[in-house]
Image (tube, rainbow, N blue to C red; front, side, top):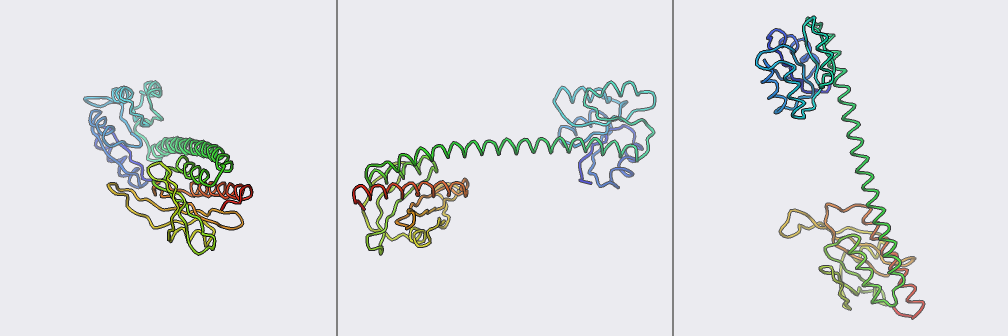
Length: 299
């Protein structure tokens, strides 16, 4: 059994004791009790049971009154009606009010237990269906987001590889990274001609690209260039917030790595897909550099 919570609403102490001690406890169900309809209604509101075992005839508020009020308040909880012999016609009429089943007093423990299991199985299947639907909708939205990102990546790639010179290419590459990955900051490094040092050729700050031409010694950039693979830096707490940022580096090159694109991303949305997108942008950048080199001898 799964331990669902079952509310027993009946003004008869003997009935409640029988249901609790001979049916619910041995079957490992959680349970709560109410001795009349008003108390039961309050427990439905406050304790959110998985199933209600509801007596038809009770003082203060009878079973029909409870069902009417549940309908009025949108309390969608399955109900099994417990009714005396001779009230079968009434029991059948209230099926449209949320009643899943009914048992006639006096009933055997096996009879009520079977009704409980049928009602809860229906509830479990409905919840599983709803969960699968939510999962499907979320997956569908994620797929749509990735398609939009790929379309943006394709457009950005065309811009990058058609850049007329290296300065324009660096700016387009960092701006594309800003649009697609929403980094907090970004930098672009190239190896010097002798391959012994790094040159920072552009920087992305506050959404703006600033060209630079300065030697730099960045450990993550060196790791990316030497390995030829994406690398993550150490997470850091973002000032004035409870979130962390992560430096991400991807190689800039085709057969030979010539530099590295480094961006700082928030850790929460960081995913392998996002790193792959940045890697693809860097590949476009490498292709563009090769075109420029072939045309002008630049770099």
